[in-house]
Length: 350
Ligand code: SAM
Ligand code: DTB
Ligand code: SF4
Image (cartoon, rainbow, N blue to C red; front, side, top):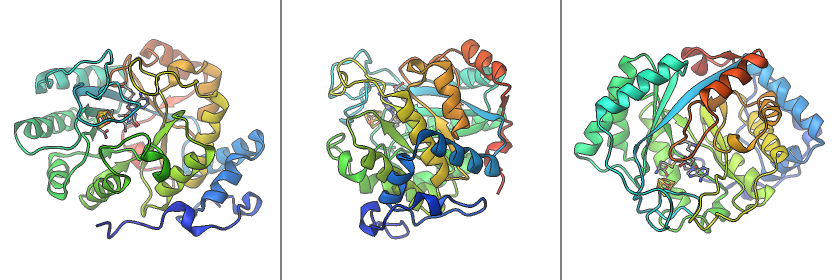
């Protein structure tokens, strides 16, 4: 079922963590990370971890550049999946109801506004378990063509995809597909029961085979252990090639979901997670994703210093708030950062 995908799970490889000897040299991308090595990195003294992540970041990326991506939910709510974190699941009573799919004109108007505000990547999300062939998919293909015609990078996150659907998205011009592993294989079962980890990996394989770049990451703060977080990063780092984009989200605790009462993520844990992602996937765009409204400006900058070079830009994520563009522009300016040009995101220094 999973031919073509690195199937050996993270924990099987074993081996001692030797962070002192294992900092990746610039130019080297390793696919043989073990969970123990990842945890050893994660648990380094904070400044040592950040120093190492920063030096890898500087070797592979422009140190002052940040990619601005805008998200739009093109089909909100009413999702048949039971993801315990998600306000769009129809399994829970949340503030998000099922809405009709947006039409192409509304999506392209939003994309044009995003471009006017300085975004270079536009990501369209749908609360679907999987893509079904038919008019809704044809509409998504039109949206992708329209977003590309505006000169933006186009990304979609629509749930599971077949090979053929991935090929059609590629033909329409899609640059990237977001499909998160979310957590470790072990922890996944307690977060989602309506699909498997392997099904996630099959979609990632279909995306890769179609020649679309892979955007895959996860969520911290769902009650998982540090080893679970590291195991997820190891799963991603073992993919060959590694994902071009790795979004790191902190759980947005949405009222009505089973995870609504969990404690917030400690910002220092966010920094550690980003630094380890940067060290293990040096070429990737590491995206500081959901959860920024709960981070101070200083914590966000520390995340960027530790290797995050992409953010979601705009008032809203899919259904929940994000820091507003004014706030983000001010932060970017204060820190002397530069919004990244579209192509730069795919041409990280090798
Ligand atoms: N339905 C598709 C899927 O699940 O792949 C696409 C949309 S789904 C909302 C995209 C991603 O958003 C999820 O994989 C998850 O990582 C993230 N997400 C959803 N709800 C979240 C929350 N409350 N906090 C943080 N991230 C969340
Ligand atoms: C990702 O990793 N995070 C984004 C994007 N990919 C699609 C979504 C975050 C969603 C947060 C909850 C919401 O706004 O509904
Ligand atoms: Fe549906 Fe995606 Fe939300 Fe899961 S994360 S409930 S698949 S919209």
